[in-house]
View 1 (cartoon, rainbow, N blue to C red):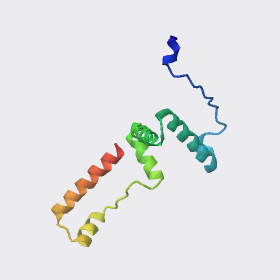
View 2: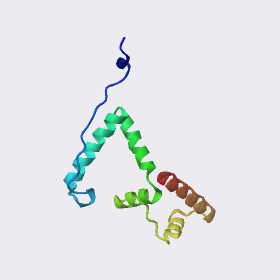
View 3: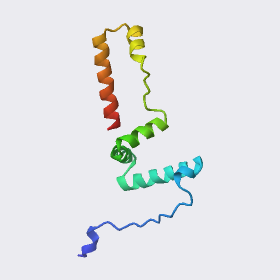
Length: 115
């Protein structure tokens, strides 16, 4: 019995140096790079569903400021104006205590999303 039959073969891939950095290239190049990274993520993690978990882990690994800038760049960061609480109270007809509870709940949800 050969000892080497127990291990999976090593697969080597060639990673080339980009001619342009991602912040200076076109949208089409960014899309192609994203597709390539998605394929590599699927191969490494073992499938499409595992690749989604891996992408979530990669996003979580970023710092809080980086996550906030990424979310703001695609328009997912909530931007609440200072008078929005009063407008919410008047429009919904809630009491101040319920508004405070709602505010706390939204802050917890936002922090859990950014952690």
